[in-house]
Image (cartoon, rainbow, N blue to C red; front, side, top):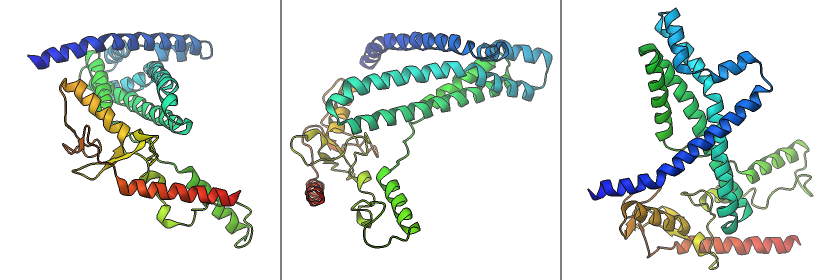
Length: 312
């Protein structure tokens, strides 16, 4: 009974944001519909606004071939869902930008906040594309079984399966490494093997031990915060697990702890690892700071400072 009471309280808190999201998405979709209608033909506009249910019934009344009905419903949903999913992506991006401006910029550096916005936008775009095609596939399969009602059920099931699947991880592009590779190629092509380089290469370009340095010093949970040994930034301290040896930032540990207490409505002494799901991995108050990693970070920061002084 207590669980159902807790679920009902959560439902009441989430129903109004869901209604607001739906109404805002519809408003954006109507705006896009009016905007697109100014530039496309009436036939194209008709394909963008036709209803898959009525289209499936109309095709089924003319042709009894189920494969033909399924293929037509697949194409119809690709057209009719284009404006809706574009509006849904626009609303999600507006929320991500609002979070970037009001929550991330005040507490993170501009580069880390921009990286967070990029990752959120990439995940949102991939999720929307996945839902867009999954709903069309579901509509096509549903139309082969039961044109009309099966079309709508298949579209909903396909959309739900794509939405419940885990969020994709963004690709990692190391800009410094890419520029260093271009620099090496340019110097090789110009035959500039010694002396002053025409294309300046990063100081750690030839150091294989630091090849994956940026990935190792970035929190694997949020993929935003870079570990730091600076006592003025305790939320960026690396915290290691007592069970699985994974390391995440202190800020992620505190966020996971707060979310867990909000979900179960009781105090939790231990929290699971967000990377491998190992239970009782991190303590909620007695954080195990990775001193060895802090020492390596401090040494690298001093090395960076010494290099910059020599450059000037």
